[in-house]
Image (cartoon, rainbow, N blue to C red; front, side, top):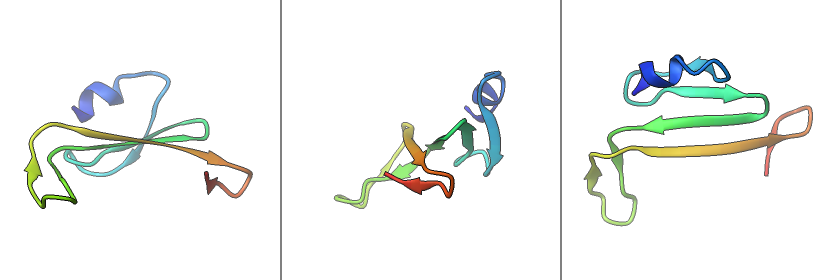
Amino acid sequence: MTEFYKKQSDLKYMGGDEGTPMFRKGTVDVTVQSPWMDTKTGKMMKDALISIVKQKGERGEKY
């Protein structure tokens, strides 16, 4: 999954390992987690959880 997103020309790879890579496009951070843990059940999920966070302001405060 990491290699797929690394090949997207508009995303900058910011680091992380194969299971939790982080990317950035402008002021938007994208994190992919696979596997990930459901916090309500504690169960490990085998699919992918994609978090998209838009930063605001010059200091990058989160909304």
